[in-house]
Amino acid sequence: MTESTTNRGAARLDALFAAPAAAVALAILCNCLWGSAFPFIKMGYRLFAIDSADTASILCFAGVRFMLAAVLVWLCGLALNRRPLPMPKGRVLAECCGLGLWQTALQYFFYYSAVAALTGAMGGILNSTQSFLGVILAHFVYGKADRMTPGKALGCVLGFGGVLVVTLGDHGGGSAWGVAAMLTASVIFAFAGPWNKSVTQKADSFSVCCINLGVGGLALAVIGFAMGGRLAPQSAAGLPVLLFLAFISGAGYVLWALLMKNNPVSRIAVFGLLIPVITVLLSALLNGETLLDWRYLAALVLVCAGICLVNRRSAPAEAQ
Image (cartoon, rainbow, N blue to C red):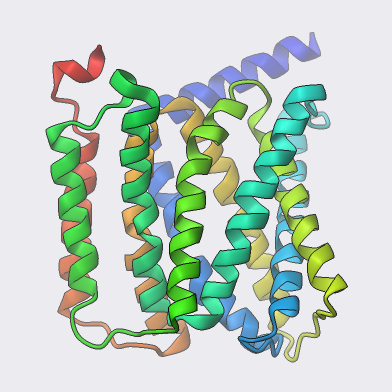
């Protein structure tokens, strides 16, 4: 009886995330959360007095964040299912752990290193490359089920045009290592999309997210503390910022996993084009990196137009 009720709840959740209107709204929310991560991480570095060269403390900060996020995901799953999360076993569990080491530990090793070395504007722009990679990768991984159509191609071009508009003028910079690290993180994220989609077909989405974040976060924290890293907040605002970042991770990963499970990868991946716009806006607001001007409005229009084109139901070939 209880298992039947849980299955019905999971089916309703899947139906919600598969509904086109809900999928669009939730994908926008997910990427707005992720877009806010970069400026809040930079704020966290200031509040914890973490220097850009202190790799060990950076890994500690990232690891603790993701472990807290795993706890939040577990509590959320417990509240929704009214029972502890059903943890996978055997080969599926090993696959979830591998995903955590890839998507959380390895990706965020490079991502957090890039945050320390880049301004918010430059980091957000470079991070947006994961959206294009996701759409392109889906074409080759899923073939006819998620092929690149003229509409998707045009949408990606418009979205990329929006990203280019944001770069007009002096909008930030950083080291060569920072650029390379952010691009590497984007590649890892893109390849994690199909893997995440595959794993969530075999196990509960909340359980996959919990293991992903927990294993990856633990790996980062262990390495960071072993290297001599430390976490010492210099302000009362430090812990709330860390908790907010944990919420971003927990909510973002759950939303992303459910969206990937119930929708074509390319349709969801393209919403990552919103990340640089949100990142630049919040970097200006929170960290005073740049002032708002027409470039951001123009970029937002182009990105939204690209999203509309990618998600338009028009080509009969897509239904094959």
